[in-house]
Image (cartoon, rainbow, N blue to C red):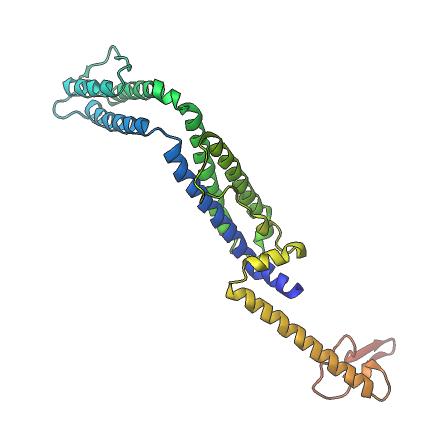
Length: 296
C-alpha cells in the first residue's frame, strides 16, 4: 500500500488533478449551454439579434457613410434608425444629431454610442422581458460568464505548474481547483432555482476531493478504485508486489544464513563472500580509532 500510494503521489498526482480540472470544465460547459437556452426568452433573443444587426449597419453609416466627405446622421442613417424603432418602438429620438461636415470621427462615434445605448436600454425595459424575470437571469448569466473566464485563466496557470510532479500539492494548484468547483456548485444551485428541473445529464455538483486527498491512506482505496481501468495503476501494483517479494526473499536468506552461522553474530552473515547483500552500516570497511585507521 505504501509503495502504490507513493507511486500515485509522485507519478499520478498531476494526472489526478488534470482529471478533476477536466470534470469541472465539462460540467461548466454543460451548465453554460443549458443556461443560455433556458434563462433567455427566445423572443428576446431574436429581438436582440435583430437590434445588434441594425446597430452594426448604423455604425457603418454614421462613422463612414457611403459617398461624400461627411459623417453623422444622414438620410441613410435616418432610415436605419426608423428600422431600429420598429424593433424597440419606445426608443426616443435623440435631438441635435445630423450630418457632420467636415467629418469629425470622435463626434460621429459619440452620436452612434448614444443611439446604441438608448436602443439597448429600451429593449432591456421591455415588459415581456421583465415578466420573464429577465434582469435576475441576466445577472446570473453574467456571474457565470465571469466565473468561467476566471476558471479558464487560473487553470491555464495550473497547467504550467503541473510539469513539476510534486506541484499538485501546492496552494497554487489546489486553491484554483477548489474555487472553481465551489463556484460551479453555487451556480448550479442558482440556475436550478430559476429554471427547474435541469437536464439530468448536467452534474449537480463536482467533487475534487481526490486531488486534495492525494497521499492520504484514508482516501487511497477510493483513488485506486476510480483509476482501476488505467494500465498504469496495475503497473504500480506490480512494482509494489515485486518489491515485497524481493524483500521477503532477502529476509529469508538472511534468516537461513543466521541459523547456519558459526558464531551467531549477525555481522558474520555479511563478512563472508556470497550472493548476499553487504550492508555498509553493519560492516563498515574501515574503523577509525584513536590509534588511526584499522582495516576490518
